[in-house]
Length: 214
Image (cartoon, rainbow, N blue to C red; front, top):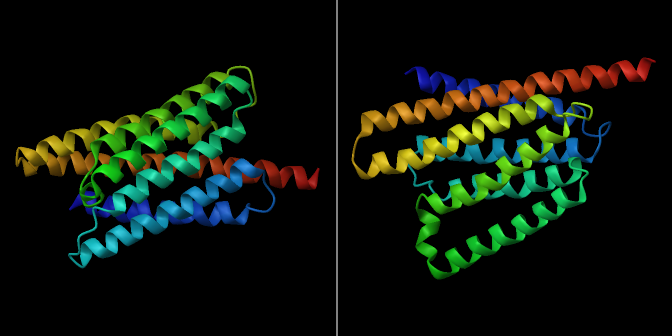
């Protein structure tokens, strides 16, 4: 199956990105190190999900770690790369509000931990889209730092949010052929996202290497 091949391609590119991020961990700034933490965390969660899936174990609960960690770590990432005080305040407010809503939701119904939570997907993805938009707007008058990472993340977040919301509807209607198409689309989006990250990392590391020899 083509999508299955792309799953492994995604893991491979993500692994390469993690190696590059760890390679430049000590020589780059705080945002770079936070993004390295994010990438390693995503690799661990995805490998755990893949392995448990192959073992036919229930692993829907791992999706909460994926979306939760992505939202939490990237919120800190954008807090440090956004310089406007208003934008930073928006991040703090949204971080507190979203985490509070999720804690309350799971406190009221713990069974959600073992289900696909559409509310969680929406509430952790929308703030990130706002942060990305802030940064891309700032880049109009600033040095294009993490530009391709932001473009890739914006495309992936828009696409994957629609994919996951649609997938849940298709599952409820038992239209598994359509669900396979939606799943494959998400895989392709993720591979594209990782390629954007890889391209940006290569440029960042090359630029830093040139500075060392100047």
